[in-house]
Image 1: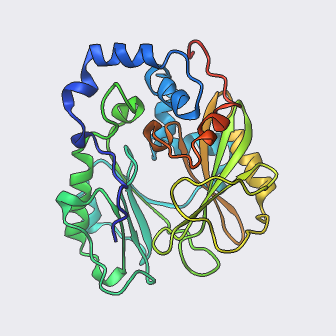
Image 2 (image 1 turned 135 degrees about the vertical axis):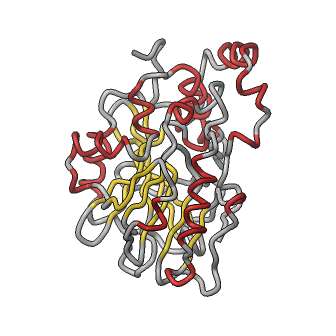
Length: 306
């Protein structure tokens, strides 16, 4: 199953623009006095070239970082991390798992028994999408072909955009499939952490079904804000592990002006998802657009990143 608009691949952007020194200089000047959230993300994309940001973006390297700060118990199980997708053919894997490239976003293969009947793996050449398939449909050679396509692609749109992704050695990671109380993919809690403090929480639900998206304050007040998807039909109860998730998010965001920390709440634990420095590549939608400024208020960008 493909979710439209999930890919922001380098190959879709004119090469000269994203590697052009004049374009970089122009963008550097036009982002020098950021006010809104989108402005500040673009400011950060051009200026924050610390190794820490590369670690955040690398889905394999970030595991060690997370373990060092909050412990391995918050990590999903890892089955394979490899630069050679051919290893996917012969290595043992459970019936259910998640496969992703380590150097990008928007490409995932989810294998589970609750996938739609008839869903198939996409062709390798058009596989930078979200896919959800049943174990019985998974051909290991096709999985390896998808992996080879992924590692062959430079994600991040070059040095003038999402720079950190261009610094990552492309690999494939296969992790445990996280399952919510209903047996489906659990809700995705995205914590916007500014200067070590959570200010906003985005909740995405129904990744492979009827998708919804809601925004909350840190004290769980629903915000009259849309990011383009509908709100959930019923008001959400305060998550049972909200305090723990906020604590985890703030510990992971230490020594940073901004990072979005994605977590999952399962029945018996909180699980780390990812750290995102560039939400939506600096193009986050806000409806109404006044929220673009409001979201940026807690964030004071530094003059220089060290």
